[in-house]
Image (tube, rainbow, N blue to C red):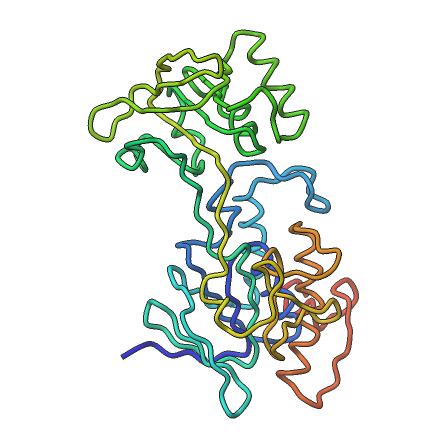
Length: 342
């Protein structure tokens, strides 16, 4: 027997935009349940860069992905959302009464008046480098993201890639690592110029190595990596000592089951209007990186704006005929009571 829940709004995705949607909906007395395929809130912030600094959140000059998640959870707390982790929505159908029925791969089912898709880029998986035998080291010596920086303290770290993730983690982990080596196929990088300059300064100071070439093989016993074979662009072949390897070849994003819901799409993203951030199916909204509209910017702060406008239309659907009075949290004693500050 599957567990069934009825709710005003079902939010799919517990990343920053999904968490802020709880707050915006809560201000309008809209009850929420939240699903996420991961085992904790935070979305990509928690999965890919929990300790990586974020610099473009308004009023927070610097915040890590983990800290931002914690602050958003605290902000949502007064509205008592119910979370369901390790769950992926598998089916969505519209009932005769206008509500939506959804099921998950974990045996849960939901009936909701509105659905908010805040699933980031959808289901994302790291692109694996074509290195023979790499599977044997994954999870013990080869990692596709950094969950805890301390795990790399005192390690011989090899980072492969030339984008922002590769350069950021090269600079951030170098002080912790016993040794640091960056490998890229060419001496040009796609990362922010400041990050590239910092890396080159570390190389010039003898604090790390930069190898131009490709990893062609791995050496080690069992799941314990001991070295990587590098083929240089000049044809040279050498082994680099390493017991931790971080390949950053980008992510493969897929909409997953959302692609089968009949929603209009644009280049594997869900199209929405810019008035309500509603999809082509009334009652289903999309906020954050999962959506597309002309001029779309994939920024967390843009998703916050989208969640605020989404909540206004969600109220009208959930409470047909009821007048929606716009209020400010700074002056409304009603809203302040909901937040527990009055």
